[in-house]
Amino acid sequence: MKALLMNTHYIVLFGVLLLFIIGLFGALTKRNLIKIMIALGIVDTGVNLFFITIGYISGKTAPIFSKQGLTPGQMVDPVPQALVLTAIVIGVAVLALGLSIVIRVYEHYGTLNVSKIKKMRG
Image (cartoon, rainbow, N blue to C red):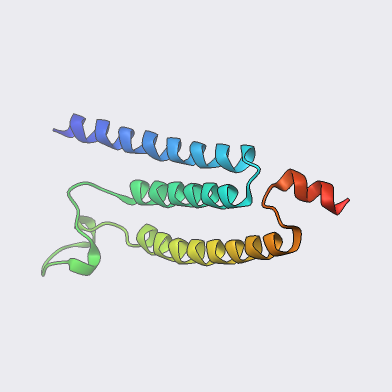
């Protein structure tokens, strides 16, 4: 049973790494600003899932739902969960700000293609 949990943990870590790489690839290779913003959102999700995966310990309970008589050794560390919750809120705010800037860029230049915007600027 323990070997199955270890394999599952590695599969999840591989999936998180794959998600991060896909987002990074999209952010570096796409020329459309909307696609770049989506790729950055995927990277953000990958990082958040990585922190949750690292903070997970099988067989332990969350400290907020603890039963009477549990010791700290029987609970997971709440710090990664709090960091991810904060990162999600910051990620949504950054995405909203980025999309509002993309809208302003489109209104000014009439395109979302980064190459065309570079040519128009100089």
